[in-house]
Length: 402
Ligand SMILES: Cc1ncc(COP(=O)(O)O)c(C=O)c1O
Image (cartoon, rainbow, N blue to C red; front, side, top):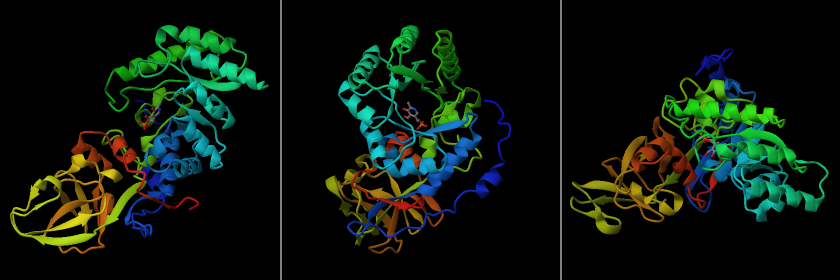
């Protein structure tokens, strides 16, 4: 971790952020359960990340429907904030970005099956390569198409995560194969950290060193990459010596921390909040139970309210008798089993009414419930929480060109 020379003071950065827009928009007509995404916040987050990064360029990761925020709007907002590249996991994600008119370079971070190569080429996506078989399949497809220009590819080196990437023992062969394949040009060389969110883990330095070795090997073999990239959000935030030419953040683009506290003074903030409105309110007597399995029983007379969102929307059933929401500026607990479309909350003697706004994620009246809270309750990570917001929850966009 090196000092960041020239990093602007946080107060100056803060002055450039858009105003907070946690105000609730009108829900879509059909259903009072919706997720709000402030595209100006995504753009501002990207601008902040790029300014504080040691690397000159930024590739915003928008796979998995922009981590649940919406693929195309997230991609557009990231580009508006200064992203130079976008990254996706799947060819169809890249094709959808192209269909929406995005012309920026797009990296597909995993090798697709050979049957997707034609779609990849048609959409002018940049493939990641890490097997000889895929490199050969690409070359064969290019030969069939009789393309004049060689195809720019990014070679992924496995530096220790051992998920996908060229295993260390095969780096030299892989580099030679790309060098010697007429239709391919090595544009990028990259790798991925396994533990970047644990700043003190020595495996970070090990992987960084291995990656430097791979970059040097490429040069020695006469196939230097134009762009090298390694750092995810955590690496972008705290590994300033190992960012190479481009950082590759995902989660931080959306204003979420890979590890609590990792943002430090950097005023990144969540772009997404998730809302619904109470559908029913009722008073229970002591001893009365609610929902499937009758797994929650009122210890005393109390008010329970029905919330029209359920596990089919991403309010996972494991939150039964566990999670909390914000209602009238107070945290209230989920009572009983979360159902497919609904759950209940115990509000005690709080005055509430059908139609009241319920904040599932975000902030209401200065009280917040975060994706990290959900992750803590569920024993998972905030990534999974936002990716888990169901497809049937409409996304309502603020800012951007919306
Ligand atoms: C290969 C790769 N690069 C970058 C990222 C972005 O990581 P993060 O969301 O932690 O910034 C991911 C996310 O899973 C990834 O798989």
